[in-house]
Length: 291
Image 1 (cartoon, helix red, strand yellow):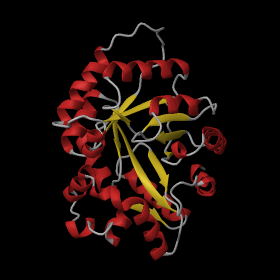
Image 2: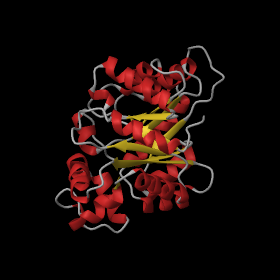
Image 3: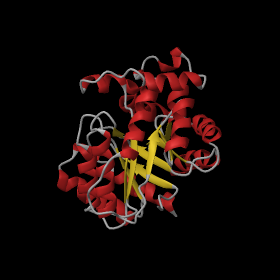
Image 4: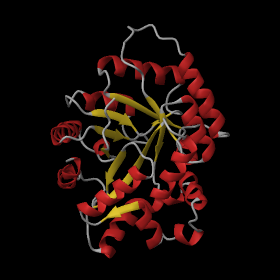
């Protein structure tokens, strides 16, 4: 599966009418982006959304970042993956993960041991019975992982790890933990604004509340960030570590830093003033990084 060095990570597409989202994916494909990452929280159901976006393009890989394991049982997840892989060989990458405590609670579940729940879920996926037509295309999956034990599980039971809201320092730590071989795919937030105050303001508007989620906050503390860094939607130090802001050269440098630290692919999430708007202009600019 040719995911390429750089892809697009977008929460924006699920907020759009389907026609607009499909048109945007077709343009991303034409621009040359090899991979598109889409999330699952409280918006569109991610497996059906992936199918609809895959039909809008000819080449682009659609990856889930991530499919929430609490949203469907293991058999449904495994067989949806098989169905999409049969329909779109080498164009569907399943990113699966345990999500966050508040999101899990909103679905009516109690998240007691995320690590154990994930291990049991992946084992159940592997054991799932499937009566559909078989496909020669391999099934590809990666695991949402931040901490050392979840990274170990990613290396043990999947093709690698998809990391989110992480600085370059985490990519180096994750590569060391994963060892050589497993995929390492960090998401990288981007603001294409050169004024520091304006860029950080846009970053905080999009990022601030997410810093309060325990998964991200605890991971950042392990990397040396403090409660002061996490307070008030993030210190300048933290924002600058998590968000590549500035011109294309600044984004290119950050991508190269992740790659040099051990990433195989970097998924760029553009943050803009209006979080409900599609960042079409910015995606067109970022296509220059594919050269």
